[in-house]
Length: 183
Image 1 (cartoon, rainbow, N blue to C red):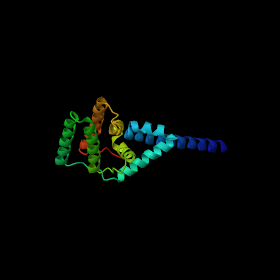
Image 2 (cartoon, rainbow, N blue to C red):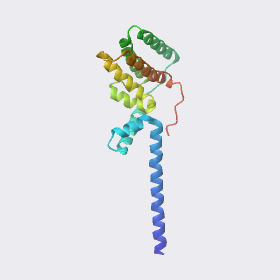
Image 3 (tube, rainbow, N blue to C red):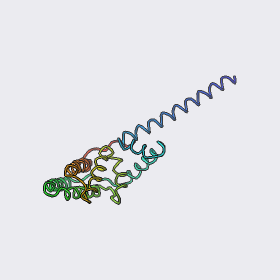
Image 4 (cartoon, helix red, strand yellow):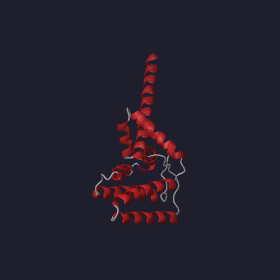
């Protein structure tokens, strides 16, 4: 009789371990899908995978509390026209155009409901919905910083415009798409 009790206890422990492993794996997979490349970047920047995943969940909770809203069509059209003007400005004043692109992206973020109190927080807030284009924003921001001290080449400035456009387009149209289930 005691052998049966031991076997049952071992089986129950194995089942509990299997379920726990499955839950951790499922949660990790959801974070990877949600954050894209930002998942690995965060893991690399933290002491442990657990700490990185905790931070990503905290970002998601903060993001869920934000009032991110779609833009009405006339507002989207105005932003699209503003972007066209910024791109046209690039030919004659590339440094100014890149600075203006940065300002326009920040303004668009604010209009959509993202806080814009600081670059690092912007990255964290954007990472929840825009993790796949976040590297574009980082690259553009870095070039924009170097441009302020006239250390960026015209080709780098052109690249910054392309990078800004990737996030700009996503922010401009993201509100039109149905949100994925966040279960």
